[in-house]
Structures are given as structure tokens and as C-alpha cells.
Length: 319
Image (cartoon, rainbow, N blue to C red):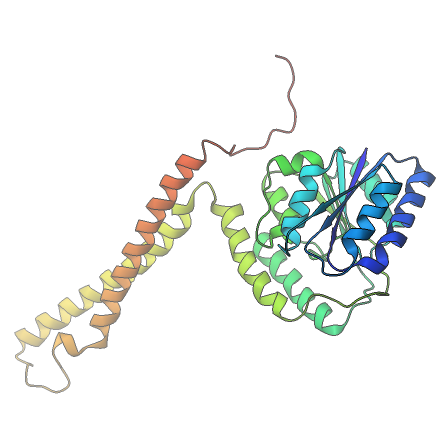
């Protein structure tokens, strides 16, 4: 069974046609479909259209949120309801071409666990394409998971991945990164991207700011989730070391000032008038705070780590 999760936000005009295209692909390739539409607080007639599709097609199910919770929440709800071994996601605006689905499955048959679409030729406005390219470069540089289009909503996954990767906030675009950090194999294929026919783009330049903040979160989760003190403690030690060096310098300054009777020399002001004293104390306090937070993070990791496995098992054999 192939589950297809489709987040919906004010896509009333495109849903029936999208369902028809998915149905045609399933019939042509013999797929047993499980279609999950998640209405993320639409204000148009999207939910009525989903109810109509579900009434006419037993393969269709719908989930309706009380308000708009964001794409990550919609995908999480869809993944929880999906019944297939393979889960594919695509947007409801018809820009993703369902005819590409067999190519996703072919890539997964070759051993890839997460297949991401790459919209090589895009039909989007510049204010969406520009930030997306900057964002994709940043993600590749920071995480070393280099995909041309992390933002693409056209992806396929093995169902087991979502037993290990939990989505919240806006981390849906980072599922390949989070999966790769746990040893799953990630790849991509070039997909056909169609021009928008209905509605308008819901993303813009502001997305790059949110994406950068989410990227910092993902960097911490994938690199230091089980050892937060390695990052926070390192920063703390560096800051603490700078503070200690500054205080040693000031101690030597004070000795020279007293030994050579330079207390009246305007070029040798008292310690409390030296900016280095303030900076050194600030560096000491900052270093101590970093290390304290690191110890607290280690305690939380030790506690919550008992509930979440720190590893990912690919295969078992024997008893």
C-alpha cells in the first residue's frame, strides 16, 4: 500500500483534479492507494470538497484542524494516519506532478529511504526562488546533507522513519537531514514542476529568517542531541578562558602599576577604569552560564534519553 499525505490550506479549486490525477496514476501502475488529506484550517470550501471525495472514494480519508497549525503539524497528523509502508507527500496546488510517483518508488526500490524531489526548472516567483536557493545552500553547508531543494514538498519516505523522527514547529523541510543523522539513506530525483493555476504562493522572503533559525535547531539536534555539553561546554570553556586571560593580564598590569609607582600616571588608570576589566568579568560569567546550561542539558538528555533510543536499527536476525 502506498500512502499519500496531502496538506491542504485553501486549495478548494484543485482538490478534485488532484484526486483524479492520483487515481489515474494508481490505475496505470496497479497501486493500492491510501489518500490522506489534512485540512490545515482552511477558510474556503476545502473541507467540504474533501468530505465529498471521501464519500465517493473509500481510499480517501480526511483530517481537519480547528485552526491553521502549519505544514509540519499537518504532515505529522497525516503520517500518523497513513497505513502504507511507503509514504509520499505532495502539495495540493497541482504544481507537483503525480506522474512522477513511479520514479520515486523506483528510487526507493534501489535502496534509498528518503527520496526528495528537485524542481530543476521552477515556475515560482523570484521572491520564492531566491530565498529557497540561499536556504538550500545554508542547509547543505551546515548539515552536509546536500540536496538541491530541501523545501520541495514532493518527497517519499519509508514509514518506519517516523517512528524515530518527530516533527514540530517547521521542521518538516528537514526530515531528510534528521533521517540522515540516524543513518537512513537520502537521495533525490529531478521532478517536473508545473506552473501554478489556482491561488497564490504562501511563502516569501520572510521564510529565510525562519528557515535559518530552524536550521540552528536542526544542527544542534543532529550534532549534539545526545551530548549537548560538547557544544555548550566548549563555548563556555572558550569564553571562560578569555576571561581568565584578561584577568591575568590585569593582574600583571596592577603589579607593574604599583611596583613602578605609576598610580599618578594618566596613562596607567586604575583597574576599575579599564574596559578590559568589564570584558573579562563578562566573559567569565558568560562561560560559567554556558557550562551550567550544558550540565542541565546533559541531565535532561539523560532523563529523556531513557524514552527515546539513541540509535536506529536497520535489520535483525536470529533470536
